[in-house]
Each structure stands twice: as C-alpha cells, then as structure tokens.
Amino acid sequence: MIDDLERAIEAMLFASDKPLDARQVAGRLGDEKTSGEVRTIIQTIAARHAGSGIELVERGGHWHFQTPADLAHLLRRERDDPRKLSRAAAEVLAIVAYHEPVSRAEIEAIRGVQTSKGTLDVLMEAEWIAPAGRREVPGRPLIYKTTDAFLQHFGLTSRKDLPGIEDLRAAGLLDPVDLAFEEAMGELDLVKDGEEA
Image (cartoon, rainbow, N blue to C red; front, side):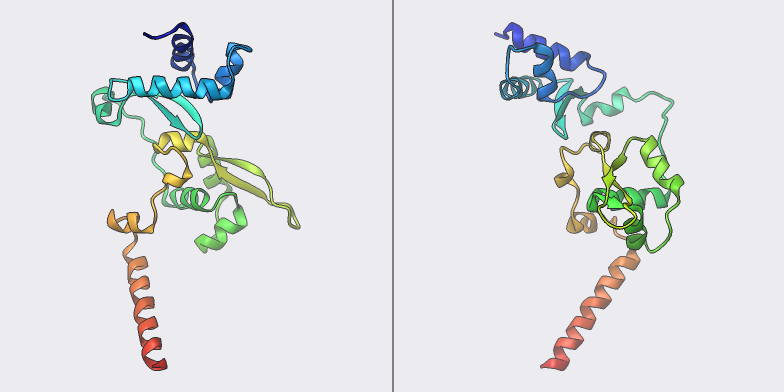
C-alpha cells in the first residue's frame, strides 16, 4: 500500500519541469522529513516504476521521470529536431567532460588548435557545459564543467559513467590515426627494450 507521503513525493517529481534532488523535495514538504528519508522514499518509487512504461531515474543526484530507452522509438515524432555538433564542438565537449574543470587555454593545448568562443557558446546554449568559476592563476581564466543537462542528455548518472579508452576502442570510435600512433609508439617501445637488452 502506498502511503500519502510517497504519493506526494511521486506527484512532485512527476509534475516538476526540471529534475529535483532529495533536498529540494524535502524543502517542499516542510519540516516533515529529512533529505535522507526523502531519498529512501524516492528510491522506493524508482524501484516500483522499474521496468514499467515510465522510469524514475537519477542523473547527477537529481531525479526525474522519463520513458525507457527501449520505448523511445515509439514516442519519436516524425519531425526530429536534432542538435548536430560540429567536430570542434564535439572535441571541446569531450575535453570538458573528461578533464573538468578546464580553461579555454587548456582545451586549446589538448586540441592543438585555437578554440573559437562560438564553439563554447554553442555548448553553453545547449546547457551541456557551464562556467565553474576561475582558476587561481595569473589572469584568472574562466573554467568550464559539464552540467546535469549533459548527464541527462547522454543518459549518464555521473561522469564516472563516461566510457574509458577500452570502451571507445571496442566501439570503433577511436580515430584510425590515433590507433596507428598508439601501435607505432608500442613498436618503438619494443625496439627500445630490445636495444637495452
């Protein structure tokens, strides 16, 4: 039997226009429950909805309802509004995700080319990256981080869920030039080891 408090929390999460964390839900309830107690109730609701037509999922500590990925094809409209990223924007997004918080100069050092402000603007408009403050070095450059919207869009619970190098290699997503470079470096190491022996 579902109690009134569980129903109220479920209704809040369902009706909210943005994902909520346990603290926010507890705040809306007043002094009735602590965020720890609310988190337990939210996990109960999530377990109840697991495998159904809607799921309660956590992304970056915030909870929201969504349709399961295996049903997404049924809900797509004929007119898709895809967000196509340029190669530069995809590279910058990957660098921010794997190295955050990171400054524009650090992004440029990793990419080996200058990054236009427009590339960062596109990612901020998509709400996938956001300013994370300033680095405490001379010039105090602005640093960037990924957002909860990034996690939500890519179906990640946290940055720890980002694929590693082996996952990318297995999926065939590494550039052939990168693979050839790695192989060449491996052969060079073998030659050096042979010379030392």
